[in-house]
Image (spheres, one colour):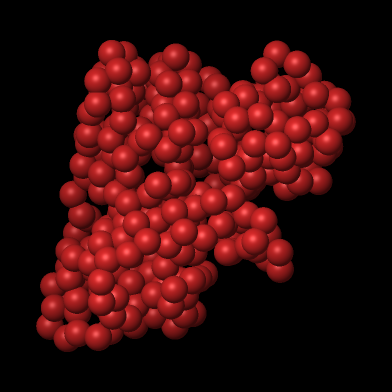
Length: 306
């Protein structure tokens, strides 16, 4: 069965070609792959199947992309323990552990959050993002910990997707960066695929607008700074790319920082601590928090002794 993915066009993509818009909305789809999907009649704007990649998208427009069924990936429910912060008939709020991939992808066909959710929720997951990403509205990196929301039905999924599109969801992350950040600030710099390495993101002139507000929480001498980052937008690797761009890469981030790390952090020290949004059932604002994981608090104590 093919996978259906749905996106809402944000203001910064207004007027862009649909092949570029699809690639920007979904980092796993290259522009050439988007052109192929369009040629195969697998991309729709609203209820209209788009035939040419030159079609220009509009703000608020809904794009539907049908991905052919992968031949080698089989999604199987797995009895994996979940740290559930909240659950009702519409959503599940999960505190994701370090090292867990959110949804299956090449090289990660099992042990993912989706495998665990399928076991926990049975058939109660939204289907908008297709068979391989049931319930998944947004994701965080494998080595990032913390809170994320999963939808149990399509109505809830659409509600949350629309809030993401207009940047009304509150997201606060906690991280430790290299160097001494003296004061609070904001990074407003467009992010897109690194032209020299498609697996990485970068600050690029024609990228999508990305805004990160950061606040200093604690200094560890002049070597490291503990900060809170609030996302105004939500681009792939946004905090990691933005902080590296101002000379303060995340501790443990060997992709955007130094390959040599003084502490065994198993990836970047980054935690999604706060998630707030309008609940899809009644429109009331709700907010959920995930406490810092033990490795993070232990590292803070160690750095305080520097």
